[in-house]
Length: 434
Ligand SMILES: Nc1nc2c(ncn2[C@@H]2O[C@H](COP(=O)(O)OP(=O)(O)OP(=O)(O)O)[C@@H](O)[C@H]2O)c(=O)[nH]1
Ligand SMILES: [Mg+2]
Figure 1 (tube, rainbow, N blue to C red):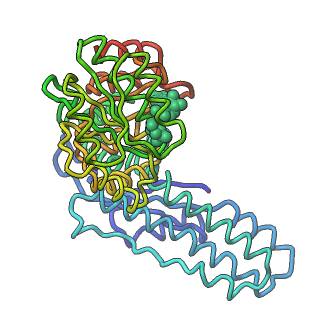
Figure 2: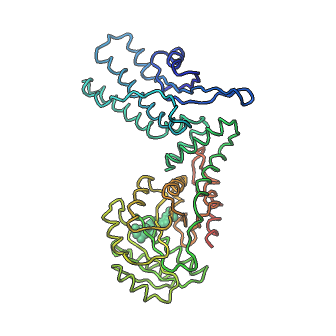
Figure 3: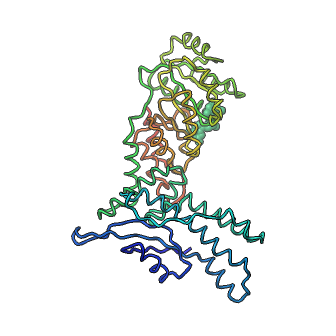
């Protein structure tokens, strides 16, 4: 697909300018109102920035068909394809809604509603149906994924935003970034690549509170989260740090009687650290164990990982913890989770309740995008981040500076590939918790 940007004074001019330039098959992808630079900042005029496209395949098909007899059904394809490409403008319009300051007055080219579902009725040739279905799916992936973001910024930024979007940076944050980017551009301010993006991400974190770490007066700590995110390993890291570095008297309770060998896993850490471990089957037993561990000034309660997209499983866990007065409840989410599932899990686990987010397995994620999205959307403080399997070292406090360091040496800008948990941030991280 060939895409070209036009700037025109009024929307009615658009189609004739675009067709003169790209020919009759050109379609409008997006339009938005912009201010044209005036003289010394004055006499700026409203103009319209329009992206138009010409699809290569349609062009080729049309050219190659000139030597062949044209069948009635052949004529259906370009028309339907054009409807398909008109879907793009629906997405670009979403971008416009965000980008235009005055939505009321925005003059947006109305998208033509796609009619792809009726293709099967109009085209009988099976192969053609398959082709059109594949175009439809390609378009959908373009539309719902990177295309909507990349259109609105200069090419240098496109790769960065696409990478971050794919790694779980929420659409809300991306839209806000693009909005800020355009405000700067329109004000003719310099935009340093990629520092401007990092500063923006940093500002997302600065809106939040300080990390909610375990304070001296906190005694009863709960960790909840989906299966295999690293709850038990993180408890071992936190318990070891508290005992070895802070000299606290640590005790462990697990209610994970669900998974085979769950108790043995925590027992191994308890033995290494020489701390007591107790197993509880319900809220009353938790209370009894807490009373029995009266010598301990810090008690961690480990829970079983379940599929918390299922409300029933969260309800069962909430019932097991009912009435226990925890000082801090951490929701544990892995960096490798997908944003949508992580948000839904967080929503369902409101049934149990949580005070802060604890993010694990940063070493397995290319970019720490999920962190920004979760903080932004859940409005809960961060606490710790785990960055590997090593107990107790691979744990860091989620300070803003430490988080920004996490991708300071990696492929955070989408320009190269590799391990984002570069050596020096990890070393910093190891000391950060001490
Ligand atoms: N790469 C990496 N692996 C980790 C990290 N934290 C934990 N793991 C690994 O993740 C796996 C699961 O860890 P667990 O601590 O058993 O996870 P869990 O949440 O307690 O699991 P369930 O109790 O079964 O829900 C283990 O192999 C850990 O070594 C981390 O920060 N990075
Ligand atoms: Mg566990």
